[in-house]
Image (cartoon, rainbow, N blue to C red; front, side, top):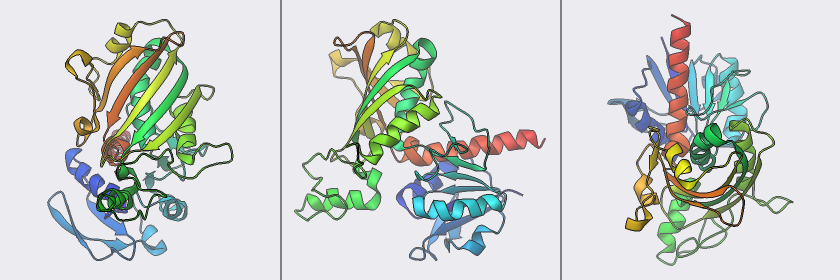
Length: 331
């Protein structure tokens, strides 16, 4: 009997997680959906069956689950993930709460595997996920020396509040989520500013890249920008390689990889855009060219659906991987 819980089931990412259950054929003997008191009692369909959403409480967290996936914010995760863990569950958390804890695995299934020092697994930042997926083939073939990110992040990354600000801003309404209007505007500001001038989002990308790629000394920097796009993040990656490479060799490194879609034919105006990647499971890569100002350095443009590969899809991929691993171990 496999008992699974989804925490934050009625949120933007939680709803996408539920969609992913069908795509990845997640088989649970018992499924429980949790939410805040505001959404408790709602009816939600999962794989053709209706479920009543329950309020998340400490008592409920101790009911004994095998797997729990969470997308309910850092505060909820900080309090409830250890309770689920104590009850024997493997917890896969989509918030930033656990990502940089030394004893917590930070996982992108195409790149690394959990060691489970603790039974909490962290899902990385949305922009980090698509970026390291694009970087991994280059690491394997050439090695990485330096990475510079500039992100162009969609408003859906801020949940319903970001979507509201974009939609209502077009009607002249004042923003309620962002400090400035996002309609017809660009904000070089995601998450809170820190003392060094970087935002927390930028620091996440730096630290998480080093951890996922197992290169704590990799030189990484980032500028994270919110743009008036509904869905799918874009990232401009400027990467310096260890081994000498040509543009064609870099391009070849991305070919034949199922989870990467190479779209790099600028002569015909073919390159990845957020519209291309929205609703798709792959990370789209293109506009590959040499940076003539730095030795052995290349520009790479990538887009990905931030609610899918950047959040729900990656989380459910981890769940699927853990369920299959434990099934093999248990015979």
